[in-house]
Image 1 (cartoon, helix red, strand yellow):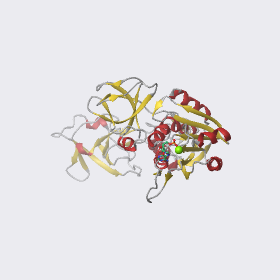
Image 2 (cartoon, helix red, strand yellow):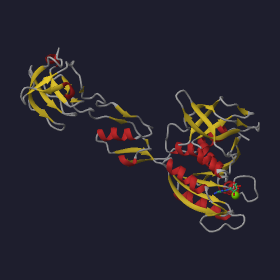
Image 3 (cartoon, helix red, strand yellow):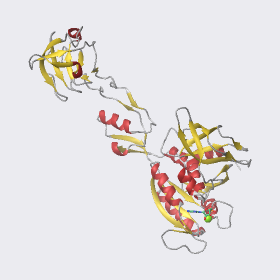
Image 4 (cartoon, protein in one colour):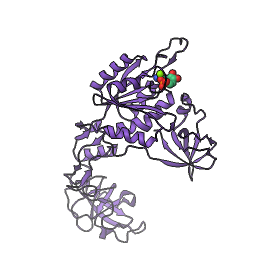
Length: 403
Ligand code: AMP
Ligand code: MG
């Protein structure tokens, strides 16, 4: 058995970052930038007000209170999107709406809550004093020309897209995301509502894996169920390698007589078959066929998902240029029993992670078998239980979230 880190480093060393493409802004979320983006404009583009109120000369408002307000003459009302027409002198103000440009002469804004109607419609009572600059958002406060807006190799989130739109940038150069083909192997597998014949089970892995891939932002191709048949597996892999950037298979990588995925990968690709010191998901095969990485995940339903999280996902993230390949690890306090036996393996325990006022907690899901998807379905995190006799309640345990 080899340590997980060795297996993962091997795989990460074999996969390449894909090329780049021009993408429209709305499809770019979750992609990684292939070039740095700099600003060509000021954001905000002009000085404007952060509140609805009155643009004033701050000096005019000194000493204003509810009982002795300062009375100012209102020159005009400036809506967002309008240009001010009047220049303010002492004793004057302009009504102004959030986002509207500050008129010349004004150096502060009094929010509408600190004013009330004056003796006639041209007058306003200011009931609190303001300082120079109050409630004014200055031009260029967020960005000025030549500022680095988004560095190269940034995973784009929704705020990045808004930021780019605010600069009038609607197309960017981003690293392609892999399209991943998925198939299940196993003569025992069927799909459908028909009654099961003796020995048959329904394929579940394709559904969990395709949805995991889609959740992680990859495009998928469902290649269906493939029998435990060398030539069928070979043909499927060769065909998929022509149209997809990566292939994920399940089953056929352990030590059984009909475990043909690893045999085919060995014959047609540059394959390494691994026994990894983890539970679940010990067997794993990784090969490159016609330049396309193939992840041979184990068949047990929980193992296939854990193997995806630990090995395939980081590699696919590397292919799309992600700067961060591994999840964020947290420490939680164990609730309940994390007993185990020493077996040379790190156990990835399906846990329910939660938080109270003082700490994160981890509690094992009820069923921990590698065939028991109910435990995986109940869990929101995987805890990393080191080799040994396990942990008492109240111990510290590292975990990462599955969403
Ligand atoms: P294998 O890795 O092919 O030896 O399969 C290990 C176990 O996982 C066996 O009990 C299989 O029946 C089961 N299994 C394999 N593939 C799937 C699948 N796609 N869906 C559900 N169970 C599977
Ligand atoms: Mg099988």
